[in-house]
Image (cartoon, rainbow, N blue to C red; front, side, top):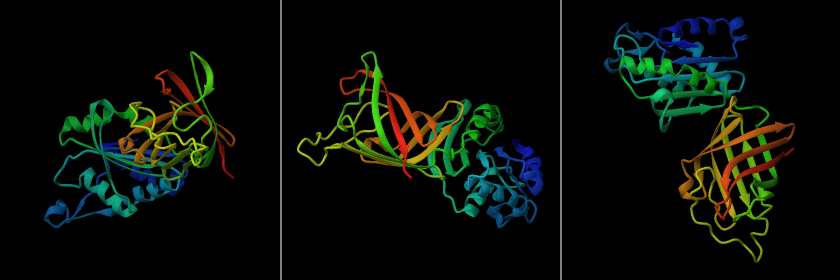
Length: 299
């Protein structure tokens, strides 16, 4: 972990291949800096970044993208003036890795204001608002939450394609097949890749027959997506919270426009080639239940 000027110690470690081999994860909190060339000449006046101080971070980020390491970087909007800001070094790093920020307006840990996010494999960069010393210290106070986030890699065991085996609801009335527009035994495929992408497609088994379910209106259930005409689909990004045992799907695109931008969190458990996902939701009649989806890995 390196906060502020502490990034220098992390950089020294990452410059030594022997040390790098022993490092599983790195967290840089608002502290990836470097000098300007010429010294003290900001980018706005024609200066450039001294990238020799950043190369080790780029190399470690590539290893994280490949899934070999874990790397989380945060930055604020503070502009020191005489040396490069963490925003400028973050921009350089993303350009070097051919990655692009996406807007992510959200309340971050300890009341911070998150503005942007990038994730590729086990590399993640978070941009936060704030250009004052208290904003800088707020990120340090968020250390516990950031450490928990760093400990949430893309699980190699989760990566792959999965086909649905069963979809059951359990509650006060016992355990029974899930209801709704997808029917009791839909056909479904779920895919997680090594770069943090997820895609899901679910279809009522008799959709092409005479009893195709009606088009469903947008749902008010905050933890479920909305099927339409016996079909449901979405794609986006996923993150894993190891301590909580959850995977969160961040929907970038979805069949239902109202689902775009939603975050759907599921508990998960793996047993070899069997994946179990479960979450709290409601049945068509409004009854609260725990819905469990059992998936089999596609070989």
